[in-house]
View 1 (tube, one colour):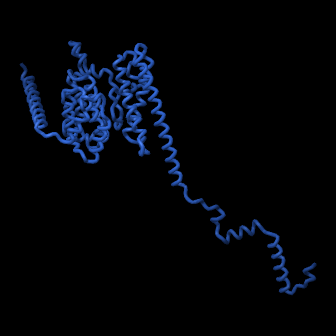
View 2 (view 1 turned 180 degrees about the vertical axis):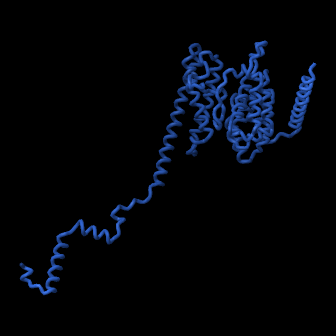
View 3 (view 1 turned 60 degrees about the vertical axis):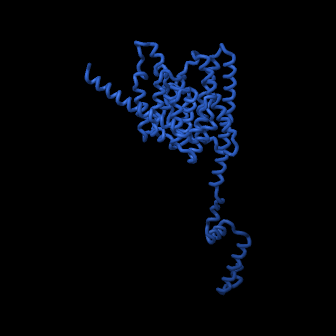
Length: 379
């Protein structure tokens, strides 16, 4: 046997053994460590009994991290434990919580890098026995973070994505074993789509994007199963409910400019053509068709509310800026003239009869002083 191969296997075994030892050590520490307030909050936000993410709890955790009431490191550690767990529901909810924290908290990315959360996400992506939706979701987050220019100062994100993308399971199909190829990661991500630009988090659970040529959508909705259509409808409904609740929140005049509100708005706009295509392609299930029609109506209603709110905010802003810019009335050109110049110009352009009589009288007085007779004056 080739010595180089033996040495390579030995190096892999050594590296894998060290990694396994570290993982076991971390898990033992987690077991022996008493639960913290942060871990309890994460447990509550990722309960297996939850059907959908508890957005209120997620936003509360983000707010307490920003207010330094929660330790961001402990939150990330708790999320990492959930990702490495066996419950598909907890894994899915923990990925949603991780994304919410990453989008709303400045220091989360450095904690994600230092706590090696990406390692757990890669293991989840490569685990063929794990839930396919969770694997897809984890890959989407790794890809978005790896391609984000805003995270260039943390090379681990790009390195992790590049190593995952370079894996044979991503780019090549296992021709010798078609069954294994179907469960490979390439099969899982068989419809790759462009990643949205940095700052456009959250990444949609099923990314909706157009092709590079700006043509039709990547999805072929005519071939989607009823389950996939229901899932897309449910995703859109959840985004709608959250956006609607934020728009109806009182005491927030500029809520339309919030980062989360804008991202939810973009997500709803992306979902609108998808829902319409589901309506057009659904002919064999009245229940799905009815749900799609209802969600489409809600989409139009919420989008119109958002647009109307934006118009009102724009009008108010223009009025306020106009009142600030408008100073005291500018003086006329006549008011700018000096007093003497003004009087001279008044004399030139407006001589009254009284003023002309006064001039004749003054001329007579001058003649008398010079000794001129009145007769000559009369002549």
